[in-house]
Image (tube, rainbow, N blue to C red):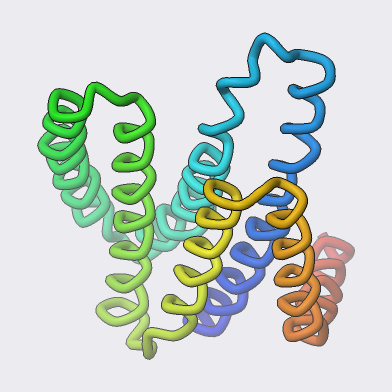
Length: 189
């Protein structure tokens, strides 16, 4: 059924996205050792990766579902509201702080908020599902952001690997089951 597919796809996409956040560590190593002139860019990577993760989830899941549910007008409304909200937040943040990092952080928070607004709308209004795992997902995102921004890189890597392993163990059966189902679907086509 559509609600079941949505929930499973959402869970799988977040898992894959969270694992891909680990690219931060090899990217920073590469920049440090081969492109030291670009070292200043490293501070933006965690925010950029989180924004990419949330935008990917929005485009691959939320937008597809809203279109499938014939909710294009809702999609347009949300995108318009968040564009206005972004301008209303980001422009004053820049003029108050004169910090590109503050603008990136504000944008990242807005993108997370937008993505979960879409998810809450789809779950509650369209698919009549309970809101699940959102707090846990946000906790993982915040933990990752805090670790990569404020911790020494090696401690941050150790924490990320530990969390990723625990998360993978918790979802192991689900991930294997989902991949088997995907394989069967594509094999029959």
